Length: 276
Image (cartoon, rainbow, N blue to C red; front, top):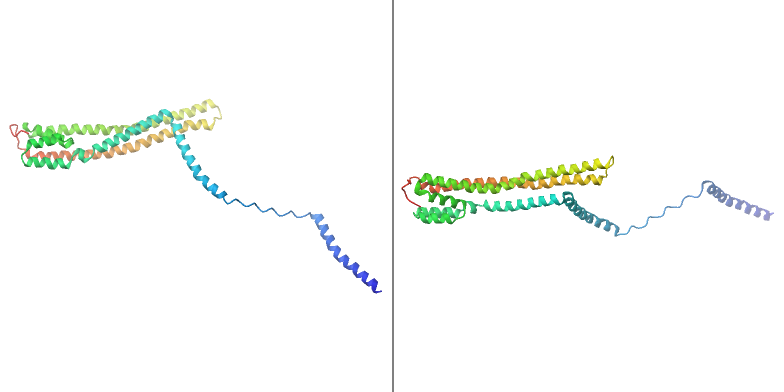
């Protein structure tokens, strides 16, 4: 009797253990096994960021070099040569005019003091020699006045004015070349603009309905770069010309006032008066 009870308990226990396992197998067969978890991404190398960081300056440097080569290629040999000549000429004229517009070149203070001292000491010939030997504009004006003083004070003033106008014309003549470059450069740039646009429209006319963008870009680049370089030369040329012209005009006015003040002591000299 006890044996049958034991067998019954074992059978019941096996049923309870097998039933959940079968239920899980049925569920897996019906819904399928779940997908395996995605594999973890591989570790990124530590030097990858450094390589990307270093690539940016290299790309920037290459871009600058390409821009310079693009500029030269867009301008071509003719425009590059013309703008280079204009630039060198402008720099040379600027240096020459700056040196010519200095006070030591136009109206040196040492000459004013020395000349006045000689006049106070009645050493007119020495004053004339001092002014004649000086290469400044003031020296040339004073020497011309003393040279004509024997014919009267009015004649001396006329001689001073003539020399002053002559020296002023020389300075203005040299300055005018800077203004010429300032006016000529934009016109050359405009000429290049028209030239480049004609080339682009020629590509459109010959290329049909779908011309290549690279062919169009060549003419447009010529148009834009010639305008840019022309303005880049003209703007400083015009600015420097106006600044130097104002300085020269102010210095010439100072020379006129100074020379008349120095020669004013001879107002009473007649044509038969003291010779220089």
